[in-house]
Length: 94
Image 1 (cartoon, rainbow, N blue to C red):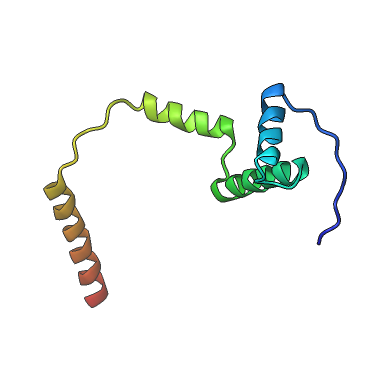
Image 2: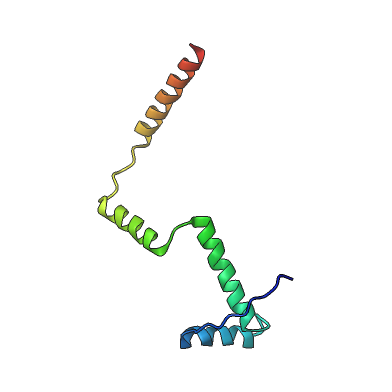
């Protein structure tokens, strides 16, 4: 088991109650296990997605500011894809 570093943290009453409820329900052995799992999930989410809240807010706002989506024309999309494929194939052959 990895060495544990002790920390003192402060939680809002709401979060402290949630931790206590999880322990009392038997889902965790103690408060440290609850906090440890929460931090592991936070780290995994941060590492996988790599976005901070501010970055996500900015990206969402950019999407909103870009205006309404335009209808997707399946046939035009496929025609363009086929054209690009044909061009690549002719470059490889030539």
